Length: 386
Ligand SMILES: *Cc1c(COP(=O)(O)O)cnc(C)c1O
Image (cartoon, rainbow, N blue to C red; front, side, top):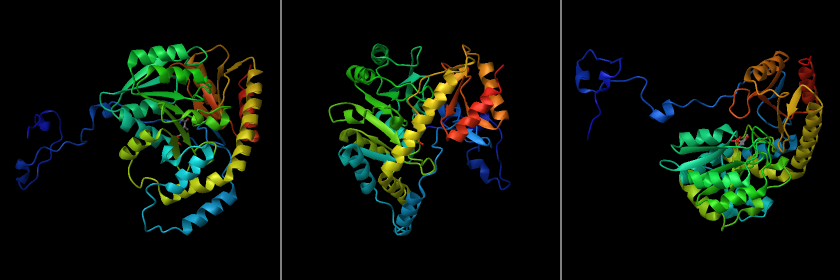
């Protein structure tokens, strides 16, 4: 076995035992070195502040229906909790498959769609492989790319935050990615990408095309129907947003069966608890309630959009999701965006601050809340106007 240079030569402190036994023990270095690429990374940041109106994380403003909670807890109570959960999560996967008219073999489930994304990168990317993102987009796509040791390729979005078929093909030809991420609708911009962009990527790539539809239910169309065995499409969904279950941590993807086979190899066995699986199963029985909530939020989004668009002091961008990106009119000035964020916070309204993010300079993102929350947001915003 080869040994690296003595650690003590590089760094204090060294521990020495009084017994003298330590002489044969390697020098202790605290903290222990992580992977250098991890040491250089920043963790995930999103301000969590105690406020009256919280519109910063794109959760549903509605708690799940009480009858759902009762049905779920009854099932949990009746479960054999001393046993491991069903490793295949069969009932949940069958339920999801039925909802989308896809075979069960095309459904992969995990703890939140973030774990689905991680599994996709572990199986299809990693060391000496590349994932492509179109910025500005969901921060966790590049973050999970990095923590899986994958090379990150970044291509810019156009002036209306669209990717575009031609630009997408060029980027794919240039970077030869093993995984290409398309967030649709895109977070944090709300942009809905036309289908020809993903088709163009699919024709240009030899890798996987991962379409993150965390906000898919709020948009008019979904890519799920395009998933089949002959194409490299994977559509990722979550129970966190429209299903009002962010606290449960449940996500899934619809993917070709050959991809699900590989995903199951890298994901941990028994990863989904009995409680999580049953939450998903029972939630699927509440389609009508879910659709009703989506409808109400889309109405509120449109109302909020009109209200913001009517303000000469504000620029707002079109959105197919449950949030809106906006900024001081004509001003990509990060300082001004930050000041507006602080002004809202001073009135106990928390939105997400993107003012210093490359590509969305000066911008803030507001999650669509209940009508009352949205009114409070608009009222707080109005006091910032001259
Ligand atoms: C919120 C969000 C998710 C959700 O992640 P979960 O782990 O399922 O809570 C995934 N993708 C995007 C783009 C999101 O905005």
